[in-house]
Length: 596
Ligand code: F6R
Image: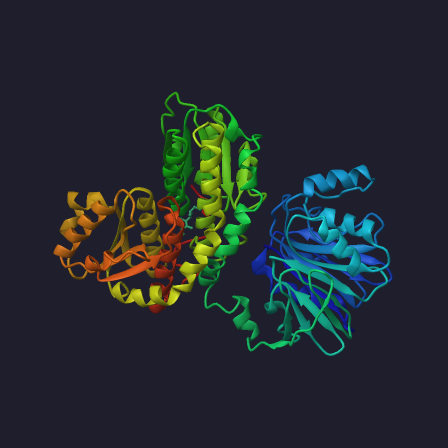
């Protein structure tokens, strides 16, 4: 996820471009850049946040320009990898948000034709394609260039000597702001509210040409589109969180696109065979902390179920003090931030022991990426709220893909089985969307827990980690004491605690543990604890053992941890909101834990 702004008008563009860009910093903040069209194309970019860029900004004179704040996806955060990119002749500057999947092949072709590249990014191919395709019309050249590209984009371009900003989008947002004698384009309406609240939302496949006095909108085949502008009622303050009350809620609702981005590219590579995943190992160890550890626990079930390769788990903080036995597993380290001190120490220890290491992380260029043999990026975009939400479900996605890959390369998963799993995985964004559509029912269900002092979460098998994660989410943001338990363990002690004031949240999916779960719920009901059950939405039996039921779409049991995690994230969020807690920044917690 990155932020884009474009301006064409009569003010000095630099002022608008920097001010508007700052409002998009939630979309990325590892590097930033700006290009302004004056007598020449002036570009200034650097690693780090926009404030840093601003401090070193030279005089950029001109009334047309583009700017960009980056969240690295391809190429680590650095000055060279920051946008905008300029073609070899210094005519075009371009900014991009999205992922160009076929950039390696395109880069090779362009290099063979003499183009010189200055960055490691996927984006740079676009500006070189533009240079090749330009025959006097920037819009036509952009459309021609985009035809060669596989992937997703929101892109904005300026050309030396022109007042036009040309933009196009596919699966990444762009909105046009309409002013008087000036027009704008941006990734999000947030950026524009200081200047206008009269906007045109661009649709997928559309492109636009913006000048100070006109805005022309085009469909995928280049035909003109007429659309009535929308008057946005948001204030600048509302818009920082995209209209959501908290970053946490916004980030939960970004789940479908985050999943989509994690799968993009990675899913097609399952059968390519040029990764350490395909090497000869007979066991796997997954190491992580906190929520990432819960994702790792789901990963253990997945890898063992799909590939039959024995998989163990270890807390990062424990691994370095363990004996290490004589095993040589493939070590997978899971860390959203890539900066957690314990996980970094575990990565170093694993390598010291001679193991091959792979990190699953969301942050390109984070420390862990330099400590391991291979990296799997989740591409969930920046997560501002301290509590992990979209990054948790994208870690699960990464583990599905890796599990399938291990299963396939170790001969445990046939092509047909792989095809079926892959097809269900591709539908996950839609299933998560269905869970989000049920948010009002989940919010209502908070009646059952909002006044409780303690809450139990129970589940079995692949959803045992899910209930640990549900309990962690509730305790960290609502400050209600919550415990996750393997449902079968309840009768070995904790049953003593159950009473009418202690609600139990139970995950009860129709899989091979279903009958046992129903029996556990009967035990709970016998102690008069109120039961909130989460099961398939076509399950009519659950209401006989639960006080309230929340349904999820009927996916294969192996995929239910994603949908239930989102349900429990919403449950924790609405509970904390009713209690008036500081949701995005819970007390005593930090987003990345850089001490051991
Ligand atoms: C809880 C949460 C933490 C992190 C943990 C590890 O919502 O976010 O438990 O999961 O601190 O962080 P990463 O994944 O950055 O290594």
